[in-house]
Image (cartoon, rainbow, N blue to C red; front, side, top):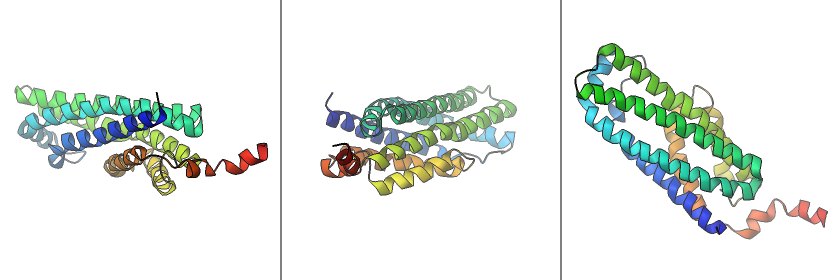
Length: 221
């Protein structure tokens, strides 16, 4: 496949991830209780917005499918820029994030479905909510952090991946995502993916992309 086609697939699928996830989470996320909320509060949340949770989780599951497509295409882009190890690391981080997100969305959806049929109790509701929250933020944050750091490493080797300034921001976000700060920076990091995807949709400048490897190439000659 032509490199520009691979970049376009990565860019379009990355934008699809952001659009689907933002829309899906927006259907119910603003009414989500804080972590550690009482069983009664969580139970009321599931009962009140169960339909929107199911609809939103369905969109988020589509976002996860799009993330797998993005990871597959981006792996080729990163490999061309920084070699197979960095590319495989980015790919693995994306799949780890996808797996954690898949678990989080399905657990949360289970709570909504049980609330809809009247079989959800406060204790079970709180347990499902807390597990989903940790999976969706802390666990998914580890995968996204690995993806972000590997992507930044590839970009610092070649402007063909993303501009250097965006790479530095991505690296900082990656470090934060590997810590408990993931609960604060995960949402902005999803928005950051939109910028990376947009950068992939532009045609790279061959002169700039090769500028960092130019001196070493000259020495080899």
